[in-house]
Image (cartoon, rainbow, N blue to C red; front, top):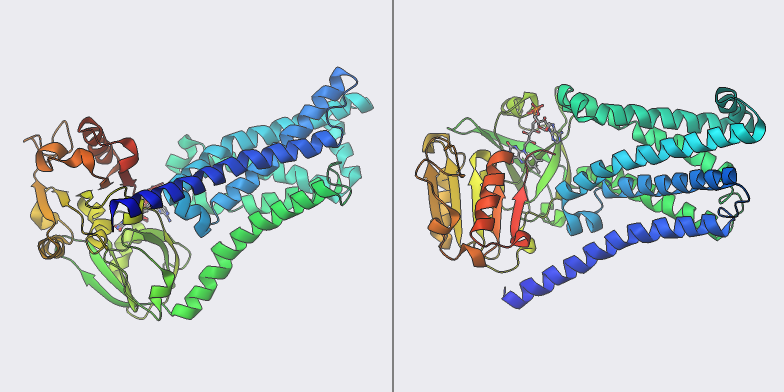
Length: 447
Ligand SMILES: Cc1cc2nc3c(=O)[nH]c(=O)nc-3n(C[C@H](O)[C@H](O)[C@H](O)COP(=O)(O)OP(=O)(O)OC[C@H]3O[C@@H](n4cnc5c(N)ncnc54)[C@H](O)[C@@H]3O)c2cc1C
């Protein structure tokens, strides 16, 4: 591929990304405009003004929840623009403002309504129930969102197992379902089937639709269409395990080297959990492979998988592919099990210029033989940086730098995958060598 093709691809992606980002602001603006058109700002007293602010915060909160749902729906149009880790990070970052906006909305509407009607705040909360079941559902929704926010606090999340936290987090969909009716049945902007009503209906259908389509319908169809099963489980000398999955028409998944999928193995021990693992070689029409290092319950247990086990795979996900590069001839930098997406990238359309593989010792380096053979075949300069961890830099006590190993690294895209602290050191070194921020691509093995 030529430099011009790379440049065109990046320009198209950045337009798409800017368009999607812009549409979030546009949706908030339209939602607020409909509320204003409905008289939200016709305040005749300070109390009316506060009540109007309460309505507007509810509207922005509702739009942001729908944006969050679309972001995490795994819809390809979102995934290809931003990449899964960035999408997951924005989804998480939006969580706090959404809950604050909901609290402000509920607080203002309750307190001001209590003032209007001469009730106490507590009796006003109960008085809302007379409006209909949907107000009880809305209050329950607020409670659910508060529980989710509390369990997402860093201090709580660190103590909880990922699976338990994730199970509680799924309640968000019950919360959304419980909150929607009060908007349509009580919110004054929504009551008449006018333009605002249609705007909200389309918004809900799109957000819920993408979620159902990409998280449930598409994986279910693909599971039955591809018939993915474990074909073989191969323990490797360094302690990791390669798992080959066989299926029909896997090229239709359009997975790219460097991508990962969320894998759910349908045996008794594992069917409840889906975990992300990268493809550890370029996908083929009838097989996919992943290579897993034991780090916790799930990854450790995969060595005991039985051939024939059925597998549900969501994805392919992620933008750690050569499609994200700005020019041919990237530099790949991996540590330990971070080699998996790099191994696949070595089989990409354009060969990378160099692969730097940081290992404690060659005997503990997953896939080293395969990587060495492929690098030799494709003319990729392989640097195995071997030795104990140094106190500074990403290499050994010898103080290797990217620029000392690849003299023209400043003109290349750098792909990094390894433990987070190590990845940060590689990023700092790449920046010091003159690699622009946008040409550094990271895959983090954890969100
Ligand atoms: C994009 C991506 C690609 C990855 N590719 C590989 C690979 O090719 N080979 C490999 O060995 N490892 C890979 N990992 C890491 C692997 O997913 C985790 O090591 C594994 O899920 C840990 O689960 P566990 O039960 O073994 O360990 P635990 O001790 O239960 O989990 C350790 C940490 O892993 C994360 N984690 C656990 N479960 C999940 C989940 N379902 N989804 C997201 N994060 C979770 C959490 O941050 C948790 O704190 C990848 C991770 C990501 C995000």
